[in-house]
Figure 1 (tube, rainbow, N blue to C red):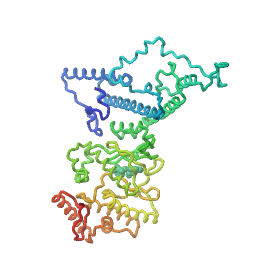
Figure 2 (cartoon, rainbow, N blue to C red):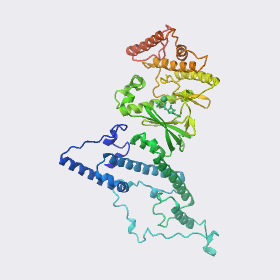
Figure 3 (cartoon, rainbow, N blue to C red):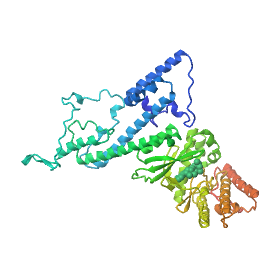
Figure 4 (tube, rainbow, N blue to C red):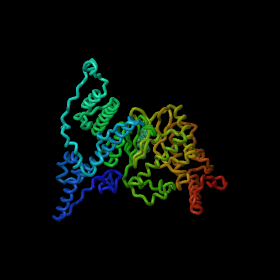
Length: 511
Ligand code: ADP
Ligand code: MN
């Protein structure tokens, strides 16, 4: 029942499959008394079930849940429960990591089992968990562990025990666990005669502190609700998980809300062996509304890389493909050495990348920055060079290149926003390239760069094609003819040309 609400476990409950960006739909309840009764019954049953699995959480939310007036409340509750489960699981994973770190490959290992939140038997029944209560000692009554006086030892003659004595020290360490934050669960160690070695104690202490910091972060985050309101609960959960797992330190706020995406700033968290997390990150959340991405059909529908998948996909998956495309395109650019954000991780429709800017301040867009003529010229040549690299080395056309998607940072231009970028042989690839060229030429010609090529010259310089038309209309016509030739070739040979050529040479194939 409730366990199925965990992310990615089993079929999603109904509330999850609704469009998360849409207004919450209030179900109109039919008026038959029987219906009302059975719905109530169903709710009661559900409540019972949840009570069994999540006693504390449900107790806290009891009021609004029982009235049953607000359907959203129950999904918020579900969300809270999912969060709690996720939290517990991640907590345990962390504990396990620490356990592993401490034990290494030592023959004698210690176990943090008792400190885990999710116990194997928690999942089904918690009835039969405690038989140790039958022992004669009351495990709850603490034998207050004795502490060693300042002089560092206790007793006389051969009965002397020092502060380094294993047993004394172990007990003392156990007692010191009381100093951990109250919400840090230390189990019953304090009440029982448990001896913790210094190593174990230190590990626990470190864990307790990082828990405390994490808890503070999460609470701090709750107050910064502006960032959260911009995203739906599922996305919020994804973001929480990123903070929870320690990958991100904290999400500070929103940098941009566009038609198709929301971008957040975050401080990076802990790097792991196989993943380096940049100190500052940008999180691009692709919006999951139908309307917006429909306009983009033409970019992706004809992109052969995604062609097979397109027809079979539901809207949610298509949005994930945008994020995936941006990731792949950024990776290609990174490999070619083009200045652009570095991909950190992709989770569903959420892409985390390195932040271009500093101390939460994003680098300005080229349209917002005033460059002196020297920098302007430098920027122009850099862009010319990047467009060529993009085309030749990455086999990509940006397809939304303009002063809006170029950032000025560290004395150079950085390219961003490449989810819509396509390969040059995309049925409209050359048109997109021409549009990019027009934007770039116009920007730099207006910006006073005398050397700036016009859009047609730039197009040829980037593509290596040699379209000779000296006016826009003819030029555009030739571009479309080339695209058509390529499409015909695909029709006839089931395969694209690898490169275009307009010199009357036979097209170059990719064999
Ligand atoms: P959109 O499709 O909404 O235009 P963009 O990728 O262009 O999405 O991001 C929107 C804005 O967010 C950008 O104009 C830029 O100001 C900011 N931004 C995006 N990615 C980054 C990044 N990696 N570093 C800094 N700022 C970024
Ligand atoms: Mn943009």
